[in-house]
Length: 417
Image (tube, rainbow, N blue to C red; front, top):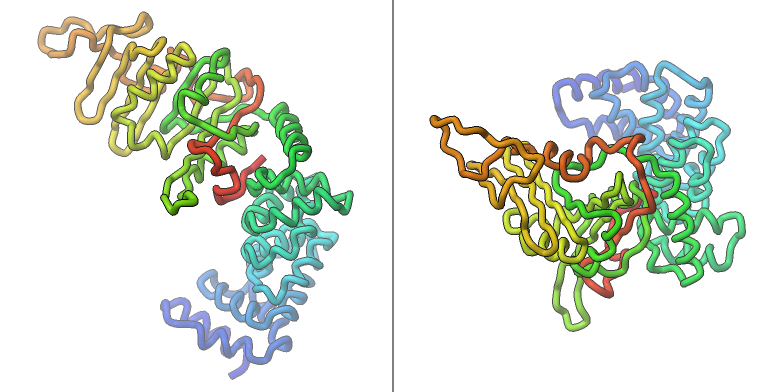
């Protein structure tokens, strides 16, 4: 059966959700000779059949890669550009030399697809590390972002290579290697001199931070002037400076299981403390706080004893449950919480509006209208989702760990600087 007939058969099978693996193998059997026709067909088939053509080109390997690159390079924009990009990102380990060559292509779109393909290969692409890290300083912001994502996918196993580059060169890669070590969360591999250099880099990046909307599911707020006490109060260790992006990406993966030398298993947590925002520091500790959401008074009182004041906020739109609470100098001062029924504790604060004295309504004597978490945050400190370019930012953030001797490299995932 000729190629045109096989592609038509692929279309029909994909349309009716039938198996296509056999058709894909037959499309790839002629090898390099089949690639031009398959590439030419990319813009003519339905999306449901596109995956089959991509898989056939992947089976063919390097010759198909070269033909796909040539097709993509014929014009800055082509009608089937999306389909060609989709295929370029999907080749396997046999095409790593081709991906490396594509990183030097004069066309930015092809360089981006090469970074995307290496990202998809993950740890298998570790050998391209020195080809990828120069893109961390690319003039194009999206290219820099793509390089960060690729480094994160390649993983922390490259940390020793990056450390060696910092020590032994080549000289033109040393600065990129330092940035890469921060991105993959391998700061623990640095010697003291490089650790100081990394902190300077992060402080420089932090000075360029632009405040933006922050998560408002669960957070703690403490005064910026007295926040230093929170680290001891929460039992945190090994704090390192961080940007807003670093802290938020760390919060996405904030727990890791560790084993002591005696075989005892523990869970360690990573906590993000924001830079000072309009006079307040926010603390994000989602996973360790989750078990204590409805019994957090001890944490809040310890924090307020150390910082003078501490506020806790939590809201779940799905269950319509929420909490806001304030502790002053070690004592819980005021709390509102609602799971099914609303509950108030402590005397109303001066900014709260009483519910009134409607005789048909039965409320607790200290009930007020302040039953919205964000509204309470607006009156007490600041609302995370309203943080923006007009918010005054001072200093840098911190990442800290809930157990000693764990280190930041124990946590997987890339940290965006």
